[in-house]
Each structure stands twice: as C-alpha cells, then as structure tokens.
Image (cartoon, rainbow, N blue to C red):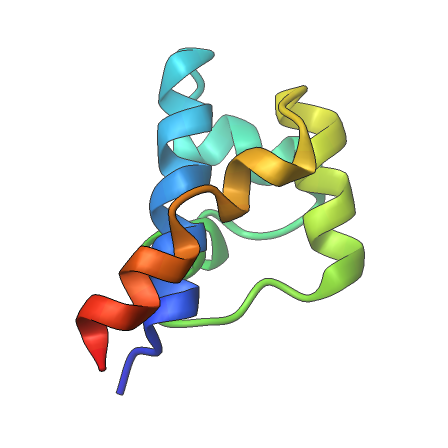
Length: 79
C-alpha cells in the first residue's frame, strides 16, 4: 500500500520535473536511475532514499522544503 508521505513527495517531484519540461527518462539519466524508478517514485510506490532526494533537490534546483510543503495536511487527510 502506498504511504501518503511517499505519494506527496512523488507528486512534488513530478511537479518539479514538469516545471523544467524534463521527461521521466531525462530525469532518470540525470539521477543515474532507470525511468521505471522515476515512475515508481512519482507514483508514491517507492520511497526516495535521502541521498537520492539530495540529488533530486540539486538536479531540479528546488529547495528541499518545497517537497515537504503541505505534507502535514496530506498526512492528516490520509489518516
């Protein structure tokens, strides 16, 4: 089952990627992962580990706090 935390962060990654007009494949190359991993992260199926999250922040050039904005609300509504 998807955890609301992973869904929220995944949606924020997708939003950041799309804002830069990057495809899943392009982001995957930049992060050194497979496109299917990007899909899994964005769908909230797989948790992004801290080191990869650091890379996401750097590659997508968005403050780390962006990925957690609204998280408390998302967690409350999922409970």
